[in-house]
Figure 1 (cartoon, rainbow, N blue to C red):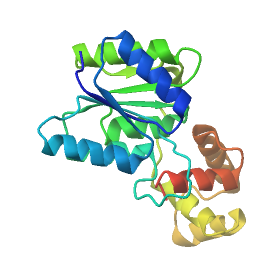
Figure 2 (figure 1 turned 45 degrees about the vertical axis):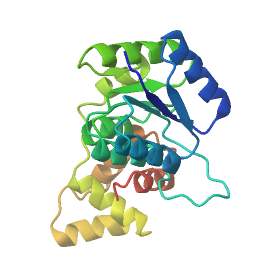
Figure 3 (figure 1 turned 180 degrees about the vertical axis):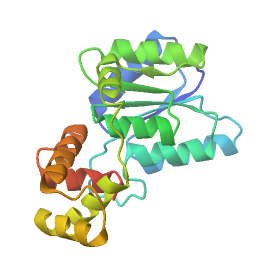
Length: 222
């Protein structure tokens, strides 16, 4: 079982819930950080002191306030921590249910677990901690795992990114179609464009095209 844990979470009530979960598992050496910058500094300091953390539990979204920060999201924190301390175990603990974002964390930051905040989050967190501390297996909350499996046949390709980039520049859909035709890019029909945008909106759970562009910008896709 883990001996030293750090929690990156900005909401006090959730911090208390995680703390109690760790105590229930007889993990008593844990620290909190309400800012990603603070969590990163604590992890770096622990490495320098030759007393590294075994586990990072991090939210993905942090509310902005008066303080100036460098690391603005849990996604960024997780990637930086993975580079700094490759062998640390990491659990993302979030309300995020967009399959692409979660898949990106597993693929790019090599997280060990994803726990969806909700009705079963405490039990899922206990399961995740137990599984990743005793084996090389990953843990994903059931609701999220189902979503990933349902969408695993859909991949974002260069054509999608090209369309999204044009939309981000404010180019009208009809004008994008003309640009595709003039560049010899296929498919370039109106129906193909509409079908692809519909799939992208469904994949990213976007309410409309503007929301889709906003999501993909935030995720660094475009």
